[in-house]
Length: 337
Image 1 (tube, one colour):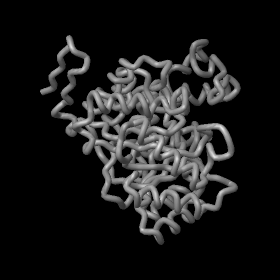
Image 2 (tube, rainbow, N blue to C red):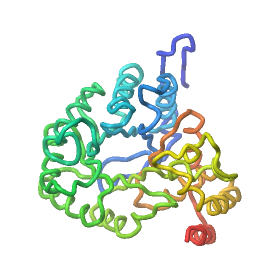
Image 3 (cartoon, rainbow, N blue to C red):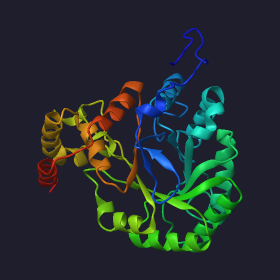
């Protein structure tokens, strides 16, 4: 039984049924199980956002059995704000449950001024993990990722930095994000020789972006590395928001850099057709899009970003039906051609 003292917002006792509410999958060939849905803090956890809403989302996520919270050093805005927000919530609500959590962060994108504030140098990565731990008030993170491939820094240098971070106890496991199959194989070979536990690859994967199917999934299976999919709803495109056109208040309506009207307009007929399949399955479009990713055994978890508790609960409800008939999969493939 869960108990909340409504007169005191700091009083929080998580649901005793939280591990009955969620399904878990092994991450590659590691000893780690990840919830099928993990929570990303890319948006809605910065200084401009309502801290009470953020706190309620984190609490509800844990109540639902979501044990994995994903960040990066530059999540905000401003940079670092999301890590500070999570750090505050951990101290107030979840400190005693730290050993039940998988907390990950990343470094690779622009973070501070000058030539040492981005990419994959040893200097940048070592400084980044130290800063991230300080912002979150943690002694270690469970997973530390290199956020994107660096075309100029030798891969060995980047992997040696990850190795040092793990062996110093600042992270338990190493990960990479957005590496192609060849880069992933090379990274795995280096870390294997160093005996560094490299267990996860974070990649953009959705019905509208299936690049991982062109070799990466096979590489990850061969190497025993799990995949966690980010942007599963294609920045909101795979939701009911765009079924009847482009609302002015939507991301595409505002022509945001990561989802513009020019990108959305040619896809609207596909979105409508996908929604018809979802309705027949008893799901909304976002739930079907998440379920479609989880049909892949190599997908260890789907990373969602939400702005409300209701949205979080709606995403988790996708787990009620993750089975697809051959006919449904064929129809989906035909629509996406």
